[in-house]
Image 1 (cartoon, helix red, strand yellow):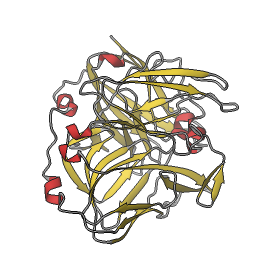
Image 2 (image 1 turned 30 degrees about the horizontal axis):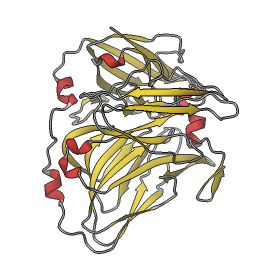
Image 3 (image 1 turned 180 degrees about the vertical axis):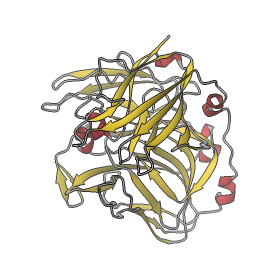
Length: 411
Protein backbone atom coordinates (compact mmCIF):
# COMPACT_ATOMS: atom_id res chain seq x y z
CA UNK A 1 0.00 0.00 0.00
CA UNK A 2 1.11 3.57 -0.77
CA UNK A 3 0.15 6.63 1.23
CA UNK A 4 0.06 10.08 -0.41
CA UNK A 5 -1.22 12.84 1.84
CA UNK A 6 -4.43 11.47 3.34
CA UNK A 7 -4.92 8.92 0.54
CA UNK A 8 -3.93 5.25 0.63
CA UNK A 9 -4.03 3.01 -2.44
CA UNK A 10 -2.53 -0.26 -3.78
CA UNK A 11 0.90 0.40 -5.18
CA UNK A 12 2.48 -1.04 -8.31
CA UNK A 13 6.13 -0.36 -7.63
CA UNK A 14 9.69 -0.69 -8.84
CA UNK A 15 12.02 -1.84 -6.04
CA UNK A 16 9.20 -1.28 -3.51
CA UNK A 17 9.33 2.51 -4.02
CA UNK A 18 6.63 4.89 -5.29
CA UNK A 19 9.49 7.07 -6.57
CA UNK A 20 11.94 4.44 -7.84
CA UNK A 21 15.67 4.81 -8.59
CA UNK A 22 16.83 7.57 -10.90
CA UNK A 23 18.83 5.87 -13.65
CA UNK A 24 21.92 7.76 -14.89
CA UNK A 25 24.17 7.00 -17.83
CA UNK A 26 26.21 8.74 -20.52
CA UNK A 27 26.29 8.47 -24.30
CA UNK A 28 28.35 5.44 -25.28
CA UNK A 29 27.36 3.51 -22.13
CA UNK A 30 25.53 0.20 -21.96
CA UNK A 31 22.65 -0.08 -19.46
CA UNK A 32 22.07 -3.59 -18.14
CA UNK A 33 18.97 -4.05 -16.02
CA UNK A 34 17.55 -7.28 -14.64
CA UNK A 35 13.79 -6.91 -14.62
CA UNK A 36 11.92 -9.34 -12.38
CA UNK A 37 8.12 -9.43 -12.42
CA UNK A 38 6.78 -10.12 -8.92
CA UNK A 39 3.28 -8.86 -9.70
CA UNK A 40 0.65 -11.50 -8.88
CA UNK A 41 -1.25 -11.58 -12.17
CA UNK A 42 -0.11 -8.97 -14.73
CA UNK A 43 2.60 -9.03 -17.37
CA UNK A 44 4.92 -6.03 -17.40
CA UNK A 45 8.10 -4.72 -19.01
CA UNK A 46 10.27 -1.60 -19.39
CA UNK A 47 10.13 1.15 -21.98
CA UNK A 48 12.89 3.79 -22.06
CA UNK A 49 10.80 6.79 -23.07
CA UNK A 50 12.41 9.20 -25.54
CA UNK A 51 15.54 7.16 -26.10
CA UNK A 52 16.84 6.81 -29.66
CA UNK A 53 17.97 3.23 -29.17
CA UNK A 54 17.24 -0.12 -30.80
CA UNK A 55 13.67 -1.47 -30.55
CA UNK A 56 14.86 -5.04 -31.07
CA UNK A 57 15.89 -7.99 -28.92
CA UNK A 58 16.47 -7.13 -25.27
CA UNK A 59 16.80 -3.38 -25.87
CA UNK A 60 13.80 -0.99 -25.87
CA UNK A 61 11.47 -3.74 -27.09
CA UNK A 62 7.89 -3.16 -25.88
CA UNK A 63 6.68 -6.36 -27.55
CA UNK A 64 8.50 -8.35 -24.85
CA UNK A 65 6.01 -9.06 -22.04
CA UNK A 66 7.55 -10.43 -18.85
CA UNK A 67 4.98 -12.60 -17.10
CA UNK A 68 4.57 -13.04 -13.33
CA UNK A 69 7.36 -15.08 -11.81
CA UNK A 70 9.72 -14.48 -14.73
CA UNK A 71 12.61 -12.11 -15.32
CA UNK A 72 14.29 -10.51 -18.32
CA UNK A 73 17.74 -9.03 -18.89
CA UNK A 74 17.62 -5.66 -20.64
CA UNK A 75 20.74 -4.41 -22.42
CA UNK A 76 20.47 -0.94 -23.94
CA UNK A 77 23.35 0.49 -25.95
CA UNK A 78 23.27 4.29 -25.78
CA UNK A 79 24.74 5.66 -29.03
CA UNK A 80 27.00 8.65 -29.38
CA UNK A 81 25.39 10.81 -32.07
CA UNK A 82 23.15 13.82 -32.60
CA UNK A 83 19.93 11.80 -32.35
CA UNK A 84 20.68 10.56 -28.83
CA UNK A 85 22.46 13.20 -26.88
CA UNK A 86 22.38 14.09 -23.19
CA UNK A 87 18.98 14.91 -21.72
CA UNK A 88 16.09 14.00 -19.43
CA UNK A 89 14.14 10.83 -20.20
CA UNK A 90 12.17 8.29 -18.16
CA UNK A 91 11.08 4.67 -17.90
CA UNK A 92 7.74 2.96 -17.37
CA UNK A 93 5.80 -0.24 -18.22
CA UNK A 94 4.44 -0.80 -21.72
CA UNK A 95 2.53 -4.10 -21.59
CA UNK A 96 -0.55 -3.15 -23.59
CA UNK A 97 -3.79 -3.32 -21.61
CA UNK A 98 -2.35 -2.79 -18.12
CA UNK A 99 -0.16 0.30 -18.57
CA UNK A 100 -2.53 2.79 -16.90
CA UNK A 101 -3.18 0.48 -13.96
CA UNK A 102 0.53 -0.01 -13.29
CA UNK A 103 1.53 3.62 -13.81
CA UNK A 104 -1.27 4.99 -11.63
CA UNK A 105 0.07 2.66 -8.94
CA UNK A 106 3.53 4.20 -9.18
CA UNK A 107 5.49 2.37 -11.88
CA UNK A 108 7.50 5.16 -13.53
CA UNK A 109 10.91 6.67 -12.86
CA UNK A 110 13.47 9.13 -14.18
CA UNK A 111 16.35 8.46 -16.56
CA UNK A 112 19.13 10.97 -17.27
CA UNK A 113 21.79 10.87 -19.95
CA UNK A 114 24.40 13.11 -18.36
CA UNK A 115 26.30 15.83 -20.17
CA UNK A 116 23.75 18.62 -20.79
CA UNK A 117 26.48 21.12 -19.90
CA UNK A 118 28.06 20.41 -23.28
CA UNK A 119 25.11 22.32 -24.78
CA UNK A 120 25.01 25.05 -22.13
CA UNK A 121 28.29 25.29 -20.15
CA UNK A 122 26.52 27.54 -17.60
CA UNK A 123 24.95 24.34 -16.20
CA UNK A 124 28.28 22.99 -14.98
CA UNK A 125 28.31 23.05 -11.20
CA UNK A 126 24.73 24.24 -10.76
CA UNK A 127 22.64 22.45 -8.12
CA UNK A 128 20.43 19.98 -9.98
CA UNK A 129 16.83 19.52 -8.80
CA UNK A 130 14.36 16.96 -10.16
CA UNK A 131 10.61 17.50 -10.06
CA UNK A 132 8.90 14.25 -11.04
CA UNK A 133 5.15 14.74 -11.43
CA UNK A 134 2.77 11.82 -10.82
CA UNK A 135 -0.92 11.60 -9.97
CA UNK A 136 -3.56 9.24 -8.64
CA UNK A 137 -7.33 9.36 -9.07
CA UNK A 138 -9.50 10.14 -6.05
CA UNK A 139 -13.31 10.38 -6.18
CA UNK A 140 -13.23 11.68 -9.74
CA UNK A 141 -10.45 14.18 -9.02
CA UNK A 142 -6.68 13.98 -9.38
CA UNK A 143 -4.18 14.11 -6.52
CA UNK A 144 -0.87 15.38 -7.91
CA UNK A 145 2.46 14.60 -6.26
CA UNK A 146 5.99 15.80 -6.88
CA UNK A 147 8.80 13.37 -6.06
CA UNK A 148 6.26 11.21 -4.26
CA UNK A 149 5.13 14.01 -1.93
CA UNK A 150 1.96 16.07 -1.77
CA UNK A 151 2.68 19.82 -1.80
CA UNK A 152 6.39 19.53 -0.96
CA UNK A 153 8.66 22.46 -0.07
CA UNK A 154 11.25 23.30 -2.75
CA UNK A 155 14.11 25.26 -1.16
CA UNK A 156 16.28 27.87 -2.86
CA UNK A 157 18.34 30.85 -1.66
CA UNK A 158 17.57 34.34 -2.95
CA UNK A 159 19.65 34.88 -6.09
CA UNK A 160 20.74 31.24 -6.24
CA UNK A 161 20.81 29.71 -9.73
CA UNK A 162 19.59 26.11 -9.98
CA UNK A 163 19.08 23.59 -12.79
CA UNK A 164 15.52 22.20 -12.64
CA UNK A 165 14.51 19.03 -14.47
CA UNK A 166 10.72 18.71 -14.63
CA UNK A 167 9.17 15.47 -15.92
CA UNK A 168 5.50 14.50 -16.16
CA UNK A 169 5.86 10.78 -15.52
CA UNK A 170 2.19 10.30 -14.67
CA UNK A 171 -0.36 8.25 -16.56
CA UNK A 172 -3.17 10.35 -17.99
CA UNK A 173 -3.31 13.95 -16.78
CA UNK A 174 -2.87 17.11 -18.87
CA UNK A 175 -1.71 20.00 -16.68
CA UNK A 176 -1.40 23.76 -16.91
CA UNK A 177 0.73 25.21 -14.13
CA UNK A 178 2.71 28.21 -13.00
CA UNK A 179 4.93 29.34 -10.13
CA UNK A 180 3.67 32.63 -8.81
CA UNK A 181 6.34 35.32 -9.23
CA UNK A 182 9.04 32.94 -10.48
CA UNK A 183 9.76 32.37 -14.20
CA UNK A 184 11.62 29.41 -15.66
CA UNK A 185 14.30 29.82 -18.33
CA UNK A 186 13.70 26.74 -20.45
CA UNK A 187 16.75 25.24 -22.15
CA UNK A 188 15.45 21.86 -23.37
CA UNK A 189 12.21 20.01 -24.11
CA UNK A 190 11.94 16.21 -24.07
CA UNK A 191 15.72 15.90 -23.81
CA UNK A 192 16.54 18.17 -26.79
CA UNK A 193 18.22 21.59 -26.41
CA UNK A 194 16.83 24.94 -27.50
CA UNK A 195 19.09 27.36 -29.34
CA UNK A 196 18.88 29.71 -26.35
CA UNK A 197 16.91 29.86 -23.08
CA UNK A 198 13.30 31.01 -23.25
CA UNK A 199 11.58 32.79 -20.36
CA UNK A 200 8.23 31.23 -19.53
CA UNK A 201 5.77 31.80 -16.69
CA UNK A 202 2.99 29.34 -17.58
CA UNK A 203 3.28 25.81 -18.87
CA UNK A 204 1.06 23.21 -20.50
CA UNK A 205 2.47 19.74 -20.05
CA UNK A 206 0.90 16.42 -20.96
CA UNK A 207 1.83 12.92 -19.79
CA UNK A 208 5.34 12.01 -20.90
CA UNK A 209 6.61 15.53 -21.58
CA UNK A 210 9.70 17.05 -19.93
CA UNK A 211 11.21 20.50 -19.42
CA UNK A 212 14.78 21.38 -18.45
CA UNK A 213 15.14 24.92 -17.10
CA UNK A 214 17.37 27.31 -15.22
CA UNK A 215 15.79 29.16 -12.28
CA UNK A 216 16.91 32.10 -10.15
CA UNK A 217 15.99 32.23 -6.49
CA UNK A 218 13.49 35.08 -5.95
CA UNK A 219 13.51 37.46 -2.96
CA UNK A 220 12.95 35.77 0.41
CA UNK A 221 9.41 34.43 0.72
CA UNK A 222 7.05 31.66 -0.31
CA UNK A 223 6.00 31.14 -3.93
CA UNK A 224 3.15 28.78 -4.77
CA UNK A 225 3.39 26.30 -7.64
CA UNK A 226 -0.19 25.56 -8.70
CA UNK A 227 -2.15 24.09 -11.53
CA UNK A 228 -4.45 26.39 -13.49
CA UNK A 229 -8.13 25.63 -14.19
CA UNK A 230 -8.19 23.67 -17.43
CA UNK A 231 -10.96 21.92 -19.38
CA UNK A 232 -9.61 18.74 -20.90
CA UNK A 233 -12.93 17.12 -21.82
CA UNK A 234 -15.78 19.15 -23.37
CA UNK A 235 -18.43 17.24 -21.39
CA UNK A 236 -16.84 17.88 -17.98
CA UNK A 237 -16.18 21.01 -15.95
CA UNK A 238 -12.63 22.36 -15.74
CA UNK A 239 -10.40 20.82 -13.14
CA UNK A 240 -10.02 23.30 -10.26
CA UNK A 241 -6.67 24.86 -9.40
CA UNK A 242 -4.53 22.74 -7.10
CA UNK A 243 -1.43 23.75 -5.14
CA UNK A 244 1.24 21.18 -5.95
CA UNK A 245 4.37 22.64 -4.29
CA UNK A 246 5.72 25.66 -2.42
CA UNK A 247 9.02 27.25 -3.40
CA UNK A 248 10.62 28.71 -0.28
CA UNK A 249 13.36 31.27 -0.84
CA UNK A 250 15.32 31.73 2.37
CA UNK A 251 18.80 32.01 3.83
CA UNK A 252 21.69 34.23 2.95
CA UNK A 253 21.49 35.64 -0.58
CA UNK A 254 23.75 33.78 -2.99
CA UNK A 255 27.03 35.40 -3.93
CA UNK A 256 27.02 37.09 -7.33
CA UNK A 257 25.58 34.59 -9.80
CA UNK A 258 24.07 34.76 -13.29
CA UNK A 259 21.09 37.08 -13.67
CA UNK A 260 18.24 37.00 -16.16
CA UNK A 261 20.10 38.93 -18.86
CA UNK A 262 23.12 36.62 -18.70
CA UNK A 263 20.95 33.49 -18.78
CA UNK A 264 18.87 34.71 -21.72
CA UNK A 265 22.08 35.59 -23.52
CA UNK A 266 23.34 32.00 -23.51
CA UNK A 267 23.61 30.22 -26.87
CA UNK A 268 23.71 26.47 -27.42
CA UNK A 269 27.11 24.99 -28.16
CA UNK A 270 27.59 22.77 -31.23
CA UNK A 271 25.24 21.52 -33.92
CA UNK A 272 21.66 20.50 -33.18
CA UNK A 273 19.67 17.69 -34.79
CA UNK A 274 16.72 20.04 -35.34
CA UNK A 275 18.75 22.08 -37.85
CA UNK A 276 19.37 18.98 -39.95
CA UNK A 277 15.68 17.99 -39.83
CA UNK A 278 14.52 21.45 -40.96
CA UNK A 279 16.48 21.25 -44.24
CA UNK A 280 15.73 17.59 -45.10
CA UNK A 281 13.18 17.01 -47.90
CA UNK A 282 9.92 15.27 -46.97
CA UNK A 283 9.82 11.79 -48.51
CA UNK A 284 6.19 10.96 -47.63
CA UNK A 285 3.13 12.47 -45.94
CA UNK A 286 0.67 10.48 -43.82
CA UNK A 287 -2.47 11.28 -41.84
CA UNK A 288 -3.59 9.58 -38.61
CA UNK A 289 -7.20 9.93 -37.44
CA UNK A 290 -7.82 9.76 -33.67
CA UNK A 291 -11.37 8.75 -32.65
CA UNK A 292 -13.34 6.86 -30.00
CA UNK A 293 -16.64 5.09 -29.47
CA UNK A 294 -19.53 6.93 -27.81
CA UNK A 295 -19.19 4.91 -24.58
CA UNK A 296 -15.45 5.76 -24.41
CA UNK A 297 -14.53 2.09 -24.13
CA UNK A 298 -12.53 2.00 -27.37
CA UNK A 299 -10.05 4.56 -28.67
CA UNK A 300 -8.89 4.19 -32.24
CA UNK A 301 -6.35 5.33 -34.81
CA UNK A 302 -7.61 5.24 -38.39
CA UNK A 303 -10.79 3.50 -37.30
CA UNK A 304 -9.30 0.48 -35.56
CA UNK A 305 -7.74 -0.47 -32.26
CA UNK A 306 -4.18 -1.69 -32.02
CA UNK A 307 -3.15 -5.21 -33.00
CA UNK A 308 0.46 -5.79 -32.02
CA UNK A 309 0.77 -8.38 -34.81
CA UNK A 310 -0.34 -5.88 -37.49
CA UNK A 311 2.02 -3.40 -39.15
CA UNK A 312 0.16 -0.11 -39.61
CA UNK A 313 2.93 1.97 -41.16
CA UNK A 314 6.01 0.83 -43.09
CA UNK A 315 8.79 3.40 -43.36
CA UNK A 316 12.01 3.31 -45.35
CA UNK A 317 15.17 3.90 -43.37
CA UNK A 318 16.68 7.26 -44.31
CA UNK A 319 13.34 8.94 -45.03
CA UNK A 320 12.02 11.99 -43.24
CA UNK A 321 8.21 12.05 -43.18
CA UNK A 322 5.44 14.50 -42.32
CA UNK A 323 2.59 13.10 -40.22
CA UNK A 324 -0.67 14.92 -39.51
CA UNK A 325 -2.65 13.76 -36.46
CA UNK A 326 -6.36 14.63 -36.70
CA UNK A 327 -8.28 14.54 -33.40
CA UNK A 328 -12.04 14.10 -33.87
CA UNK A 329 -12.57 13.63 -30.12
CA UNK A 330 -13.63 16.52 -27.85
CA UNK A 331 -10.77 15.96 -25.43
CA UNK A 332 -7.01 16.24 -25.49
CA UNK A 333 -4.97 13.33 -26.75
CA UNK A 334 -1.25 13.25 -27.40
CA UNK A 335 1.13 11.90 -30.01
CA UNK A 336 4.18 9.92 -28.94
CA UNK A 337 6.40 7.82 -31.16
CA UNK A 338 9.14 5.54 -29.89
CA UNK A 339 12.81 5.55 -30.96
CA UNK A 340 12.91 9.02 -32.55
CA UNK A 341 12.08 12.64 -31.83
CA UNK A 342 10.05 14.91 -34.12
CA UNK A 343 9.61 18.57 -35.04
CA UNK A 344 6.19 20.18 -34.46
CA UNK A 345 5.34 22.37 -37.48
CA UNK A 346 1.58 23.12 -37.16
CA UNK A 347 -1.13 23.13 -34.49
CA UNK A 348 -4.71 23.44 -35.73
CA UNK A 349 -3.37 24.62 -39.07
CA UNK A 350 -1.30 27.42 -37.54
CA UNK A 351 2.44 27.22 -38.39
CA UNK A 352 4.72 26.82 -35.37
CA UNK A 353 8.26 28.08 -34.99
CA UNK A 354 9.47 25.45 -32.55
CA UNK A 355 13.05 25.82 -31.32
CA UNK A 356 13.45 22.28 -30.04
CA UNK A 357 12.43 18.71 -30.79
CA UNK A 358 9.81 16.67 -28.94
CA UNK A 359 8.98 13.00 -28.49
CA UNK A 360 5.51 13.61 -27.00
CA UNK A 361 3.10 16.43 -27.77
CA UNK A 362 -0.53 17.21 -26.93
CA UNK A 363 -3.12 17.17 -29.71
CA UNK A 364 -5.89 19.76 -29.22
CA UNK A 365 -9.50 18.53 -29.08
CA UNK A 366 -12.20 18.91 -31.70
CA UNK A 367 -14.63 21.80 -31.22
CA UNK A 368 -17.63 23.33 -32.96
CA UNK A 369 -15.39 24.47 -35.83
CA UNK A 370 -13.94 21.01 -36.52
CA UNK A 371 -11.27 18.49 -35.49
CA UNK A 372 -8.06 19.43 -33.74
CA UNK A 373 -4.82 18.74 -35.55
CA UNK A 374 -1.08 18.41 -35.06
CA UNK A 375 1.50 18.27 -37.85
CA UNK A 376 5.00 16.90 -37.20
CA UNK A 377 8.13 16.07 -39.18
CA UNK A 378 9.70 12.76 -38.17
CA UNK A 379 13.25 11.67 -39.13
CA UNK A 380 13.58 7.91 -39.65
CA UNK A 381 17.25 8.34 -40.47
CA UNK A 382 19.16 6.54 -37.73
CA UNK A 383 20.11 2.93 -38.64
CA UNK A 384 19.87 1.87 -34.98
CA UNK A 385 16.06 2.23 -35.05
CA UNK A 386 15.48 -0.34 -37.79
CA UNK A 387 12.74 -2.69 -36.61
CA UNK A 388 9.22 -2.60 -35.23
CA UNK A 389 7.97 -0.13 -32.61
CA UNK A 390 4.85 1.88 -31.75
CA UNK A 391 3.21 5.29 -31.77
CA UNK A 392 0.26 6.16 -29.54
CA UNK A 393 -1.62 8.57 -27.32
CA UNK A 394 0.32 8.95 -24.07
CA UNK A 395 -2.80 9.33 -21.98
CA UNK A 396 -2.18 5.66 -21.35
CA UNK A 397 -5.77 4.75 -20.50
CA UNK A 398 -6.51 5.65 -24.14
CA UNK A 399 -3.55 3.56 -25.28
CA UNK A 400 -4.76 0.59 -23.22
CA UNK A 401 -8.16 0.91 -24.92
CA UNK A 402 -6.67 0.78 -28.39
CA UNK A 403 -5.19 4.16 -29.42
CA UNK A 404 -1.85 2.80 -30.63
CA UNK A 405 -0.31 1.75 -33.93
CA UNK A 406 2.73 -0.22 -35.06
CA UNK A 407 5.38 1.18 -37.38
CA UNK A 408 8.22 -0.79 -38.96
CA UNK A 409 11.38 0.85 -40.24
CA UNK A 410 12.96 -1.23 -43.00
CA UNK A 411 16.43 -0.85 -44.50
